[in-house]
Image (cartoon, rainbow, N blue to C red; front, side):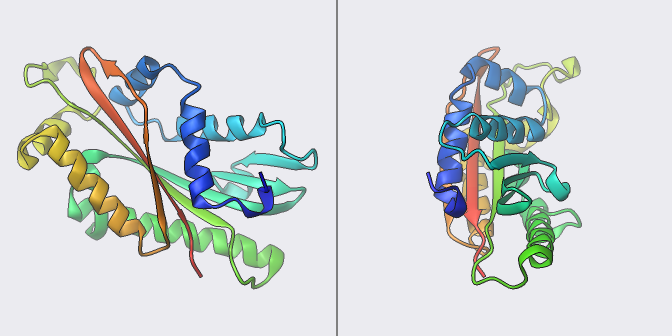
Length: 216
């Protein structure tokens, strides 16, 4: 792999490979019971760090200059990756996707701005910035009989409302996938990969991963 020119398709493939190292049932537990944004970042960075062809003078940074993940050639970043993790019910809500004060589109723009500021300070203006932004969606097909008073499953009340609103779990997931892909396409071409996941207490858990190489 040429680490000086990793693109969004390679990041998506690497994330899928990294998740494949984890038992699907363990992933289902983690993503059914709460948000695990840093878990995905740490899984990806530790996986890349173990790749045998990573040059000796390169390292994989976590929170290097406050960026989620970087690949560095010494003190010079050859790739900055900024990631977000959201529920499918959030992504299926256009207000949370595009409009409210902390919407997903705004967060992506802020990550790009921060990354470009770092790169400008190091390199000055370049023909292409090595920035990939990612978004991981997760959701659980909540059993209608599940007792919300258990407080066991993360965001169970919100999932139940969204599943009902969209006429089913699969319908909600499809709306979320389409919304995130459309939102991210503003910034560049979108790579998408589903992550193999298991079940939690008999309920299907779904994880989707999106990556974009930011255009100039």
